[in-house]
Length: 511
Image 1 (cartoon, one colour):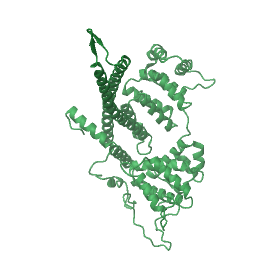
Image 2 (cartoon, one colour; image 1 turned 90 degrees about the horizontal axis):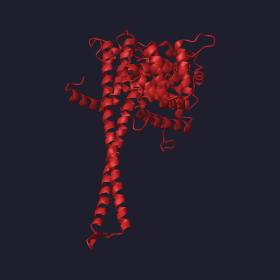
Image 3 (cartoon, one colour; image 1 turned 180 degrees about the vertical axis):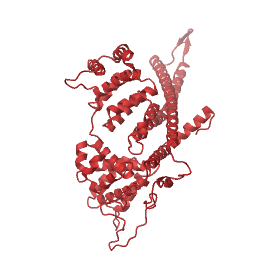
């Protein structure tokens, strides 16, 4: 790609091709990470040409970010933050400092905010803060400096509350390697009866998370050793949603660890996907739908994990079915060989005499028995996997039904009347005045200065109008509908399966 034998500069064509694939819907030809690596290598191989072309593409996409599909926007955020992490986080942020003058829900402002937050995940807070020193105002868009929010810490000299005492006692028991059964007995006998569910849940979840907060390994160890304790306290979706809320409070300054912990708990089946949906659609998260990707990230992870279980089980079942056929053939051959040998038995003086070598007969019999055992074992494994697939389908159905019912409910509450807005363009224009910049189509620019520069363009990347003309309610609807579209497109086949299954089992049309 670096040395194509063509007589013209093809960097722009190359960049256009790469970005067109990276942002292709519904899926790019390869995983997004592939394009990240290709762009990084091209920037290093063509340092005098390609980085400027990439920067130009980013600026062009940034100018039209309000019109970019929500899924494409997230791919761009993830790619751009990762790309910058490979080049010392260097970017002329002063060009985008004007986003601070935009409302907190303006897509350009949210884009910068999300890129900076993702950069912190790939580095650390101080490094990213240093990278925006040429536009110090952008520090306002940085998330809080990472750290835990442990509510039962004890300050020297202060009086210890009852919940702090319980937390300290629980911590001592965990560090003393007491078993999950012992912890459950202590909770049921000494904590729950006098303090109630909510306080018990807070103390247990906060304390266990704090013990597991030192590293990912610590977290996994705690979940494996004491997951039964959490499962005992939070056996249903309602309590698991409370668990997620407490977890979210503990990691409120570290969205990455919050997402990781929820994902791990879902993996250990301490949290169901329906509980995650329930939490995502709590009022505090609904109000964040248009200004933060955090609730959507948790939801994407839950849907992806549920879907991947089905995909993995389908692959395993397909492979096991092939193994069953192979095992049947091996077992049939071993049985045929044994029967053939047994037919050579002869009667001598009324007693059976082996016509074959006795050692060979024993070996053939052993082969036949082992082949049959293997066949039975594979069949049993297949039955287990098929049962798990059925369970996964049910979980998938419950997830999509819960998700779209919640989406339908919140959209009904917030979407304007049909007479006011029938299209996204009309929705964007509800609060726009007559001089608003049209968001759906690029404005025609007159090319009449001597350098051919558009009159409306600014050398520092600012737009002629720094005021985002879409109201907050409309932006909430636009963003939420964008995410709905992205989910529906990505999981269309699974959603169709759920729809058909629900229709056949309930006898009702799916709405």
